[in-house]
Image (tube, rainbow, N blue to C red; front, top):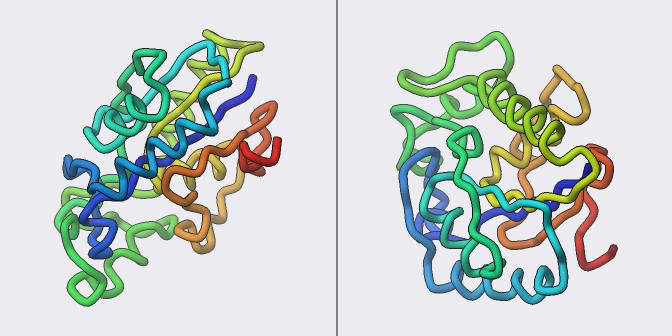
Length: 188
Protein backbone atom coordinates (compact mmCIF):
# COMPACT_ATOMS: atom_id res chain seq x y z
CA UNK A 1 0.00 0.00 0.00
CA UNK A 2 1.14 3.54 -0.79
CA UNK A 3 0.23 6.75 1.02
CA UNK A 4 0.48 10.15 -0.62
CA UNK A 5 0.62 12.66 2.23
CA UNK A 6 -0.25 16.32 1.85
CA UNK A 7 0.14 18.78 4.70
CA UNK A 8 -2.54 21.47 4.73
CA UNK A 9 -2.01 24.93 3.27
CA UNK A 10 -0.59 27.83 5.24
CA UNK A 11 -2.78 29.58 7.82
CA UNK A 12 -2.40 32.97 9.50
CA UNK A 13 -1.22 31.11 12.61
CA UNK A 14 1.46 29.33 10.58
CA UNK A 15 2.70 32.71 9.43
CA UNK A 16 2.76 33.97 13.04
CA UNK A 17 4.53 30.78 14.24
CA UNK A 18 1.62 30.01 16.60
CA UNK A 19 1.00 26.47 17.76
CA UNK A 20 -2.28 25.56 16.08
CA UNK A 21 -2.76 22.11 17.44
CA UNK A 22 -6.43 21.25 17.29
CA UNK A 23 -7.60 24.86 17.07
CA UNK A 24 -9.76 25.02 13.96
CA UNK A 25 -8.00 27.68 11.88
CA UNK A 26 -8.90 28.30 8.19
CA UNK A 27 -6.44 28.64 5.35
CA UNK A 28 -4.83 32.00 4.65
CA UNK A 29 -4.92 33.29 1.03
CA UNK A 30 -1.40 31.85 0.55
CA UNK A 31 -2.65 28.50 1.83
CA UNK A 32 -5.44 28.47 -0.73
CA UNK A 33 -2.93 29.14 -3.50
CA UNK A 34 -0.60 26.44 -2.15
CA UNK A 35 -3.42 23.89 -2.08
CA UNK A 36 -4.29 24.72 -5.68
CA UNK A 37 -0.61 24.32 -6.68
CA UNK A 38 -0.57 20.94 -4.97
CA UNK A 39 -3.63 20.10 -7.03
CA UNK A 40 -1.57 20.58 -10.18
CA UNK A 41 0.79 17.84 -8.96
CA UNK A 42 -2.11 15.57 -7.94
CA UNK A 43 -4.45 16.14 -10.90
CA UNK A 44 -3.39 13.02 -12.81
CA UNK A 45 -3.19 10.78 -9.75
CA UNK A 46 -5.83 8.20 -8.99
CA UNK A 47 -6.51 7.26 -5.39
CA UNK A 48 -8.48 4.40 -3.92
CA UNK A 49 -9.61 6.81 -1.19
CA UNK A 50 -8.92 10.29 0.13
CA UNK A 51 -8.76 10.87 3.89
CA UNK A 52 -8.30 14.11 5.77
CA UNK A 53 -8.21 15.55 9.23
CA UNK A 54 -11.57 16.86 10.37
CA UNK A 55 -10.03 20.31 10.99
CA UNK A 56 -11.09 22.89 8.40
CA UNK A 57 -7.57 23.75 7.17
CA UNK A 58 -7.09 20.12 6.10
CA UNK A 59 -10.61 19.75 4.71
CA UNK A 60 -10.19 22.95 2.68
CA UNK A 61 -6.83 21.76 1.37
CA UNK A 62 -8.24 18.37 0.36
CA UNK A 63 -11.12 20.01 -1.51
CA UNK A 64 -8.86 22.47 -3.33
CA UNK A 65 -6.04 20.05 -4.11
CA UNK A 66 -8.12 17.05 -5.14
CA UNK A 67 -11.69 18.17 -5.93
CA UNK A 68 -12.45 15.04 -7.96
CA UNK A 69 -13.02 13.05 -4.75
CA UNK A 70 -14.81 13.70 -1.48
CA UNK A 71 -12.34 13.39 1.36
CA UNK A 72 -13.33 11.22 4.31
CA UNK A 73 -12.71 13.15 7.54
CA UNK A 74 -11.04 11.20 10.34
CA UNK A 75 -10.39 12.62 13.81
CA UNK A 76 -7.32 10.39 14.18
CA UNK A 77 -5.66 12.66 11.59
CA UNK A 78 -6.22 15.81 13.64
CA UNK A 79 -3.12 17.75 14.63
CA UNK A 80 -1.32 17.05 17.87
CA UNK A 81 -3.25 18.48 20.81
CA UNK A 82 -1.03 21.02 22.57
CA UNK A 83 -3.52 21.79 25.31
CA UNK A 84 -2.99 25.03 27.16
CA UNK A 85 -0.13 26.19 24.91
CA UNK A 86 -2.23 26.15 21.72
CA UNK A 87 -2.36 29.58 20.17
CA UNK A 88 0.94 30.63 21.73
CA UNK A 89 4.14 31.72 20.01
CA UNK A 90 7.58 30.43 21.13
CA UNK A 91 8.25 33.40 23.42
CA UNK A 92 5.05 32.51 25.30
CA UNK A 93 5.44 28.75 25.68
CA UNK A 94 9.20 28.49 26.21
CA UNK A 95 10.39 24.94 26.88
CA UNK A 96 6.94 23.52 27.60
CA UNK A 97 6.54 22.52 23.94
CA UNK A 98 9.90 20.72 23.81
CA UNK A 99 9.11 18.91 27.04
CA UNK A 100 5.70 17.67 25.87
CA UNK A 101 7.09 15.61 22.97
CA UNK A 102 9.81 13.79 24.84
CA UNK A 103 8.90 10.23 25.79
CA UNK A 104 8.23 9.80 29.48
CA UNK A 105 7.34 13.46 29.99
CA UNK A 106 3.81 14.47 30.85
CA UNK A 107 2.02 16.50 28.21
CA UNK A 108 1.11 20.09 28.86
CA UNK A 109 -2.22 20.34 30.68
CA UNK A 110 -5.08 19.28 28.40
CA UNK A 111 -2.57 18.16 25.72
CA UNK A 112 -1.35 14.81 24.46
CA UNK A 113 2.04 13.12 24.35
CA UNK A 114 3.85 12.18 21.16
CA UNK A 115 3.10 8.58 22.12
CA UNK A 116 -0.63 9.40 22.04
CA UNK A 117 -0.29 11.01 18.62
CA UNK A 118 1.74 8.13 17.18
CA UNK A 119 -0.83 5.70 18.60
CA UNK A 120 -3.82 7.26 16.90
CA UNK A 121 -1.96 7.75 13.60
CA UNK A 122 -0.82 4.13 13.78
CA UNK A 123 -4.38 2.96 14.39
CA UNK A 124 -5.46 4.85 11.28
CA UNK A 125 -2.64 3.32 9.19
CA UNK A 126 -3.50 -0.21 10.30
CA UNK A 127 -7.15 0.33 9.38
CA UNK A 128 -6.43 1.65 5.89
CA UNK A 129 -3.93 -1.17 5.26
CA UNK A 130 -6.83 -3.57 5.68
CA UNK A 131 -9.23 -1.48 3.58
CA UNK A 132 -6.74 -0.77 0.75
CA UNK A 133 -4.05 -3.48 0.92
CA UNK A 134 -2.74 -2.91 -2.60
CA UNK A 135 -4.03 0.59 -3.12
CA UNK A 136 -2.90 4.18 -2.96
CA UNK A 137 -4.57 6.66 -0.64
CA UNK A 138 -4.25 10.40 -0.28
CA UNK A 139 -4.00 11.67 3.30
CA UNK A 140 -4.38 15.40 3.95
CA UNK A 141 -3.41 16.35 7.47
CA UNK A 142 -0.88 18.27 9.57
CA UNK A 143 2.81 18.66 10.33
CA UNK A 144 2.65 16.76 13.61
CA UNK A 145 0.71 13.97 11.93
CA UNK A 146 3.38 13.74 9.21
CA UNK A 147 6.06 13.34 11.89
CA UNK A 148 4.02 10.74 13.78
CA UNK A 149 3.40 8.82 10.53
CA UNK A 150 7.13 8.64 9.83
CA UNK A 151 7.89 7.51 13.39
CA UNK A 152 5.14 4.88 13.24
CA UNK A 153 6.30 3.51 9.88
CA UNK A 154 9.89 3.45 11.09
CA UNK A 155 8.89 1.75 14.33
CA UNK A 156 11.20 4.08 16.20
CA UNK A 157 10.71 4.94 19.85
CA UNK A 158 13.45 7.59 20.06
CA UNK A 159 11.86 10.69 18.58
CA UNK A 160 14.83 13.06 18.85
CA UNK A 161 13.69 16.35 17.34
CA UNK A 162 10.26 15.29 16.17
CA UNK A 163 9.55 18.71 14.71
CA UNK A 164 12.35 18.21 12.17
CA UNK A 165 10.21 15.44 10.68
CA UNK A 166 7.27 17.74 9.93
CA UNK A 167 6.69 17.92 6.20
CA UNK A 168 6.32 21.30 4.48
CA UNK A 169 2.92 22.74 3.71
CA UNK A 170 1.29 21.69 0.41
CA UNK A 171 4.16 19.54 -0.88
CA UNK A 172 2.72 16.09 -1.71
CA UNK A 173 5.01 13.23 -0.75
CA UNK A 174 4.82 9.50 -1.34
CA UNK A 175 5.34 6.82 1.28
CA UNK A 176 5.85 3.94 -1.18
CA UNK A 177 5.02 0.53 0.28
CA UNK A 178 4.69 2.30 3.64
CA UNK A 179 8.40 3.02 3.77
CA UNK A 180 9.09 5.80 6.26
CA UNK A 181 11.22 7.83 3.82
CA UNK A 182 8.93 10.33 2.09
CA UNK A 183 9.60 10.98 -1.60
CA UNK A 184 8.41 14.28 -3.11
CA UNK A 185 5.67 13.29 -5.54
CA UNK A 186 7.16 15.55 -8.23
CA UNK A 187 10.23 13.27 -8.22
CA UNK A 188 8.26 10.06 -8.76
